[in-house]
Length: 328
Ligand SMILES: NC(=O)c1ccc[n+]([C@@H]2O[C@H](COP(=O)([O-])OP(=O)(O)OC[C@H]3O[C@@H](n4cnc5c(N)ncnc54)[C@H](OP(=O)(O)O)[C@@H]3O)[C@@H](O)[C@H]2O)c1
Image 1 (cartoon, protein in one colour):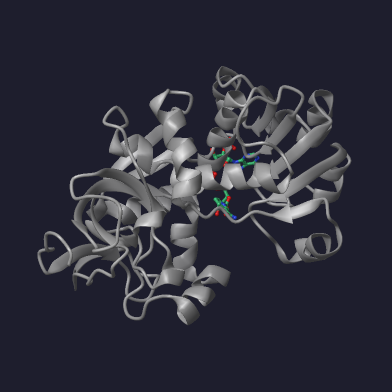
Image 2 (image 1 turned 90 degrees about the vertical axis):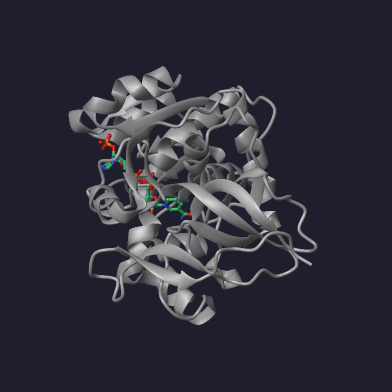
């Protein structure tokens, strides 16, 4: 038997066709499965995938086949409080949590005042960590950790001999990757524009300003690298050139895959595609680092959920430093 009921309806931000602006609508609240929890959402982290899903692409395609039926509710990352606990779920009512929705489990997205997710998609938040900071982390943090794993690198302890290069250092994924590299004692370098070089250096990384010349050529001075994480795209930072900056066992990990990347992904063991999927297992170390302030999210702007469209316009511009948040 579950504890505490929802109010019968939830508010979500959605766009009927994907192209018209996001607007708030009411949907019936969802029933809980035994391992589910209902979370009153307090903060939502915006990721580029949220607006990419609206216009198509492979994830939207997958959503059509395995996702929930009905209105497309985008959004993945959230933080909030448990308001209802399934009979076999292990997070009690009142727990503060951070988590991520998963459409492959038929769940609606996180652009809502309430989500229903399985307990293994959430980690508990200590009181010292704000919902806003926590909501910045799931997809970017899971992506950074997975990129390290794909490159065969440790995600705990200290690895002072490891060198990491981030192509696209000032965005949501880039900043958290540099901070995780710092926690792990790795040497990092980040490629960014002039306005972000001081920020990258403040995180203990070498900054490479792509407006001042060939960034990959400049990056060679700080290498060779065990991991080159490209979150911008291989049309800007060539994968074959990036490979020349690797150590013998190093990897280029792509967060964005273009059709031209397919041969390298198929035929080279040194080129990999990362898919950051947040689960309790990878959320817990991230929350631990938030609690010790080893991770400090940078929030560029916060919008009410009703103004989610404004956040998407800003994110699409490709110049957000750190994260955008929505507050239901
Ligand atoms: N595969 C996955 O699991 C996964 C997970 C997360 C994200 N992603 C993808 O990875 C990409 C980045 O995500 P994000 O959340 O980090 O995006 P974001 O926060 O929107 O990134 C914005 C940042 O990109 C930087 N940038 C723009 N052009 C650049 C260039 N030519 N060189 C270097 N930096 C540049 C900008 O900094 P400057 O002003 O300094 O240029 C800006 O701060 C998105 O396409 C997203 O969909 C994939």
